[in-house]
Image (cartoon, rainbow, N blue to C red; front, side):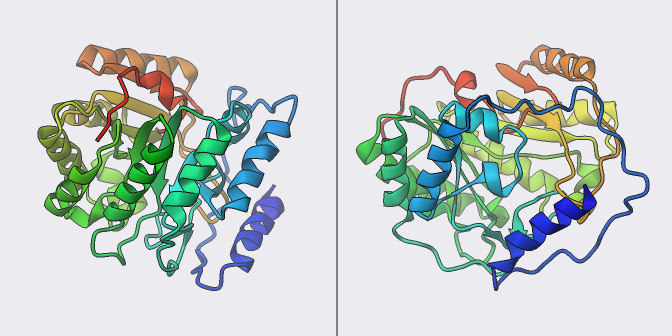
Length: 318
């Protein structure tokens, strides 16, 4: 298993001259055994999966499904859905839990919005999730590129658009102004974990800054649902998780996702604990009791997993 994961990482890096490999390799002697409920069901047919992969390659587009080693890739691709990752595949931050590569990003591809729109049209999907790597090298963190993508997609497609954004280094007033040009149907920013763990797992990020982004966006755009997500299994306590849920709800978030952290490779943080399905069900009940409109909680839940199910609002035309 270790050999396979290391080979996979080397293959990803080999074609990226601007990549900075993660040097630390975590102790492999005490890796937790995966419980029975951590089983990924493979599709009977791979034709739909291959079709989407080929469509992405043809247009030089990226999906977070592939770049972040999402466990739901087969299911989502088989159902004809994908979460598109714009602004390249190289992140300026180096979070030790994340499988996305770190290094010096390429220049913005100004043709990407049009290619993205054409690909969505060809795929005949009606719900789109757009995310990005973190681009701290850009003055606006890539916000204008998000807007350009939204506008191009709506020029050709009648779809709902959810965006999953980074924290933009706290330039919130600038970001809110940029998004006035074209708003998404859902605004998503992941809080990821509890504030105590931020220094360890999210270097460069700030818990209060993330909450402020969600709150101020909601304050300015009241009719746009806001969404956030956590991944568990890195050492957080139950009461800390509930506190984060309450913080999110107080910041105007109404849609919540909570999933299990899975170690992408031995160069990433190890799993400290596997949360049982019963515990996830308990967290869902807690979230609904707090007031969230909808909460998806489970081992394989990710921020864009079955995203369309969480949205039943009319398409916004801006």
